[in-house]
Length: 608
Image: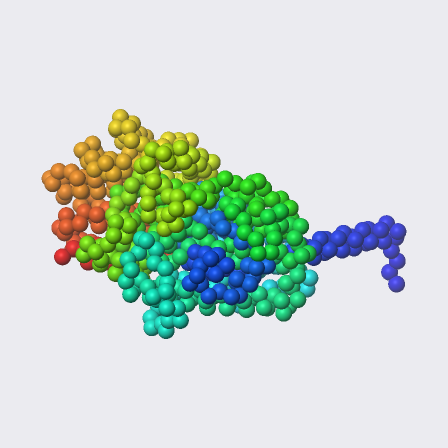
């Protein structure tokens, strides 16, 4: 028999006690389950939607707390999921653009990594779709077979189950035998009332009903495993409705999602005083708040880089006055919008108002509603509210959700609304300053300035970022003229953009030789559209050269092709050259590789 000293025995007992305490602490942490779906506004019976047939989630809501002002921050999947996984606004990460694929800053981690380090088993079933690279082990398993049942005995879990049946692509899948009566669905004021539109909306509600049953099965599994009494459950959608002018648009219609949270009796102390079975709260929350909230529920300190606020748990933070939205490049089309709401009023700032809302995005045009809507616009058969989507944008929009749920009556120009507009505008600008919104750089410069590092870190080295942000909204002619000669390319870019918006091409001729590709492109578009006809050959030479993605990269190519598309028939002399451009870029991220050929196809189709 091996003899041990008293010191050794005491050390052994101390180690055993510490291990036991750690195990006990781990076991005392709650399980957390997320049930999520895609492309769905609060289209549930429990949110008052009379078209929704959602008995399982309605029953779940009767035992839970419903949030009536939850925004996804982004109105499309990848940026929205980037917000969730990082706990940060993608415009601060250089990750606002669809499938932009960048990285988090030095030392920053995705929140499931922090859960794993604290002893949680993390499973994701199964969609990831982030705009930032995975670094290190984020999930114990991320697949269509991932499940809490694979954890160790006694190990707490964080599990995600995501259902894609409500996705935009499923709205337009044909053939489909409708269960909802198209005659009964509500058509928003901005959509035309046609059989195609009614079919799409009815099919959406069919899919919501299917998703409701799938969600119920997960809740049944939780109960069957004897875990319901020890698990906090969230239900939400990844952004608003997949129908056009909701998806991809940072209106309330594109950003508002259902959020229902259930606490079993054992963990009700982690809820707030608002929590009561079947109750609602108007506390403004958004996806940037989910990561700090989960960490708060798990008893894990919030990292200093998180930009959201915990709304549940031991480390619950004060109620915030606003939640925020954003829009960047959507697939092959560039745009830049920022939005904010206080729960009643919605404010949008358009930094590229010269682009129409309904820029041709190939994927969006697969939906029958989009095609018939455009057809009726061209035929002059739409109401004023329905025409809006096919025109250029005002610089600002302001809507009162209390009297205008569809956001079609813009109040931005009304004197009586000036104080409210100013308050929301200041909130939007304050956020851009606080998070150092690097989305004000042209997309290629976001990556170029970061080099092998992260855009988040690069943004903190741009001393004049406030000046760049200010130039994007500048109206003073003298400051715009000075901006064209600024040493910083992003300042020149926005000064040129403001001239393009104002249809003033005269001062931009020298910028056709600017060292920055983004500046040359904006100058070329402005001169091509509004300048002297004699300058058109030089304009086309600049744009066709920069449209070669093999030489200049996907982001410069996309920007150049967008400019060419807006030249319309003036681009006809270079049609053959455009057709000869490379359709793919070797070594490019695969999910980015489809955008240039899609846009090139559109451009060529529009040229006779």
